[in-house]
Length: 360
Image (cartoon, rainbow, N blue to C red; front, side, top):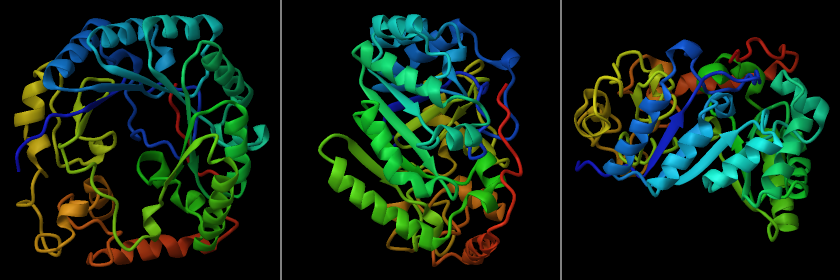
């Protein structure tokens, strides 16, 4: 398969974060502050990304606002002609920083929210952040910036979906991503506490449709499916190493944000290799490009050009082999793993949470 030019770079500036959300997709082994890339290295990464063909950059973390050089990186990316988006918890977005980000030329800010009520939101986040998020939303809008929002949906907050949408509309959001939890990192550890029952999902989908009829003319709504209940898996990032790339805080370059979970691969680092070489020639980016790597039933499946065999990271985490068919697929010999996971949620008294993300 020919190697495309990447259109997006996810720049994970840090794994540090004031929140402790139990569904965080950051890896269990977090990178410490001491191992984070320097400002000069990040500036070089942005330049290399532009030369490679990247059109947009998403600054994220952890919490990217913990990097004092964020505004400098935003300005440099804009000077390179890149569309710049910031993904943040909002904690630390003061009046001054919001103004500086606007002056640096940032194009949009995506603000996370955990629930509609402050009590539940702060409980999920493990930090009193809900009011700080409301203030951050106001500062984003006061500086004339587009406000996008996102919420991770799970067993504990699904019942508030209509109220969450109403809250985001009242805060002035133009776009809201309703993302059912994806089970990687900390979310996989906490799956028995996070995964909803199928009837809860059906109720939430009905609530989403009601809210869409009510608020659809005021806000763009996106519903991200929880694929554990689907017959076929979500596509693997439009194909492994085909559309985007991620640079982790320590400089490792990944095909997606959670691919460091695949322990059988070794990922190149921008401190040692040029970004263009990593994208085009590195063994990790070429590992699952095309179709030759596929085993049955994927190799001869008519869906292989639709879902690329599903998620390589999920296949590895659940089967130990990244070449396996994603266990979500009804044709996968490992589908029983998903059935067993779904069966565990019958225990409604399971503790909340077992583990929490520690991003300090």
